[in-house]
Length: 407
Ligand code: SF4
Image (cartoon, rainbow, N blue to C red):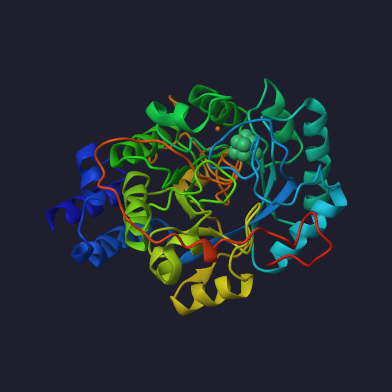
């Protein structure tokens, strides 16, 4: 297919595809799906080999958020029966992180619910970062604490944070449909603050919130402009008790096309499969490793993932290898260019002129801490899928409980 040959050539050159090309990837048929995966896989292997980076989520503070992100089970008014607790102590967080690191993770993602941290919260998290780094040589730490005020990114950087996550989640045009308590511009501003402080920026999206193909392409192009080092791709987990509980819009094939599109647009960036991997990709998860070079190990913020051991077996069975602490994740031009674990000066995922709490690791990351959403109109044909509520389980182990974590 000419389209795919063109996209591979561009990906190897770090050249931006046209929007029409990106939209065409999302519009490919199931008959062409393996060709799409193979093409995007060439780009993935060119920049990241067969390595898979493992990340481990530690939910420092769960629930009770005053914000109203529609996808999130920690939101104001959520009736989901999630664990609710206030800040973990540094030693508790360090203990939780150690489980993930022992399981093979090289990055720990410290996430807290809420609009954004107070200066006192930054102090707490700084102590937690120090505790984790003191006890685990070489570990990468990413903070995801919501919208940052002036000076907070610099303080986190000084405390030893390598990266900061804040997701854009969806297109600017539809952002107001998923959240009313903060704006898309607020999110862009926080990603820019993280960049400016020398933190490696992590910013991604949530798919499956009712958005159109155009919305998906919009947010991925906006991310490319922001030039994050890592792009988490969440697939909405429609959690009961949230406004988006009925939004079962994704098939495994659709998820693979979305990941391929993100790879083509951000070829040399760490593309991470985040929340919803098990729920929406299901038995197709191994194919997604040909597109993404990074996943979360074990559980998400408020929902359970598959067993950490199953993640490791899947990676090995698919012919990939877990990236070691001594291996550099990003291609050299990124790894040597900027702060933290990557850079934002080099090309690839663009500049950082335009511009995120971050993502849906359970949809994750105040980026969106759980992903989920409502948006969109027009364009994309509605996908009819059977709700797989049987695959959604609220996390009842690990951080905030007395039970062992899943790692
Ligand atoms: S995504 Fe973050 S800011 Fe939004 S409701 Fe969830 S915890 Fe709060």
